[in-house]
Image 1: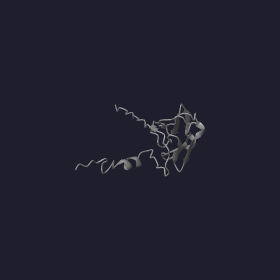
Image 2 (image 1 turned 90 degrees about the vertical axis):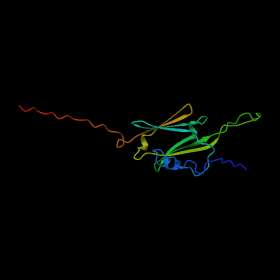
Image 3 (image 1 turned 60 degrees about the horizontal axis):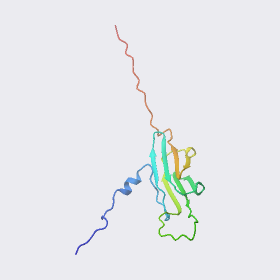
Image 4 (image 1 turned 90 degrees about the horizontal axis):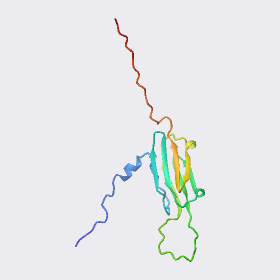
Length: 148
């Protein structure tokens, strides 16, 4: 008799450990969502950029909030009330409510976060606080007087 193992006994044992200490830890959502939009987070010298793909979602159906140092993006992608005479064979697009939640770095000024929504992509710019920005320290030179 042959047995087939469909999954490894310990799938990705460090997955939880690694995500827990990343700068933008994704807090698990307690309720089941219909879908979750894809999000990219990048870091520059001056801040962070969060880009979330929201194709087919109206700007008015998206809400952004910050509470307890967590950035929350939530909204709804509505079903298009099209022609009911269409006999759909397959529907692969997702519809319904969504929510993404990310922890913010410490000491972020919430009032300085900006949001832009263009061509179905939500872009949030989160400036770094001055305390955590890298500072360059100039190297001084001492002038040595020669003794004659």
